[in-house]
Image (cartoon, rainbow, N blue to C red; front, side, top):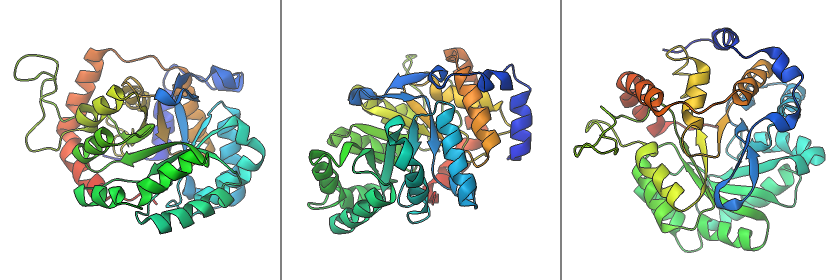
Length: 328
């Protein structure tokens, strides 16, 4: 069940968070965390540059939104060539021209052949108006065949290693919202600095939170895919990668089923560095910053209760949806 953005704002306004908290806030008061082994310190809320950002049809409004996000203390910008075939990068670049030093800048590449990836990333640097980005992700890993393409000699992964060596990017990573097992395999095999994955309370798919032996391992419903939380996140944590949570509201599908702050806090209570959120109106930026400023980790019992309720209702449908979803 989806709800409107107006309802989202009304629900959030009913909480204990007040507009004055943002109005009088110093940017440094937005909580920050270390991005894994990169050592970089970033805000725990990131500005998403995908389909929601592209809902700003007027460019001036889009640039105003970026500046507002950064003024409120967001220091991580998530964009990609695939978001509007470079449009998101172009808009971000117009703000980076004057604010680059304030922002951890991440972009993504959705092409697998090395020569094509190289050409597009050269364009990304021009669009972003910078000589160096902080992070380049391989965008949207899907299945075993896709991983094989990524791993081909001279392919996109080799290009990213070269660009990291050349200091064109400080760090490299990979994202997925499709198949947790394939992402886990990619993380095991390769020296990524960061990874971005779907992490929300409805994707866990656990029945009682305990394994058959009574331990703490999640028991996965055999009809569902395992979750990123249960099999990909532990690999990333073991290798000390910076972990970025995405799809925390499941493209708004979870709004109305739980308070927005609980959905955000569930993802931020996992062992991650931050969460990327698409915010297509200035009001949404204000509200999400307000929630992030008031963040306190959810008790494990509350996380379990929330995930069980939401997974029962949503996980099978979300698995199917995200299998073919392209955020462009």
